[in-house]
Length: 109
Image (cartoon, rainbow, N blue to C red; front, side, top):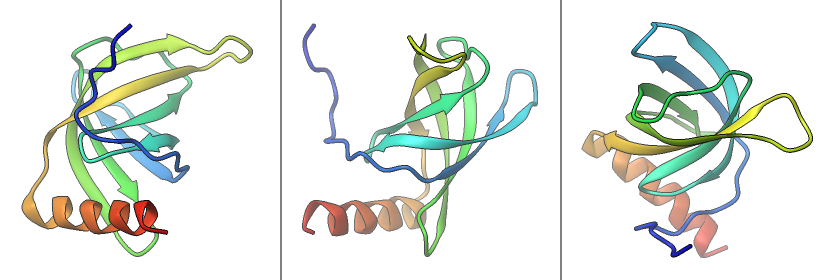
């Protein structure tokens, strides 16, 4: 399988609030990794491919809000939960700058 990511990911575990736009449900979870283009999260419920999700990621000093779409969702092998890959589709300049600064701190640490 070829690598299709457009941005490098870093392994970080931060609180994430998700709002599914298809069924208006909210859930709280954690990130598994993060990049400028998306985030991998854990979830108790299956998320359908291409569903839209509003995501708020707590980056310690700031909460960044983005609109994302579900790219994939797979059941974990040893647990009754799923991992889902979300691609960012809408992010304002302020949140984009905050995310970029945060990731640069990690890359350069």
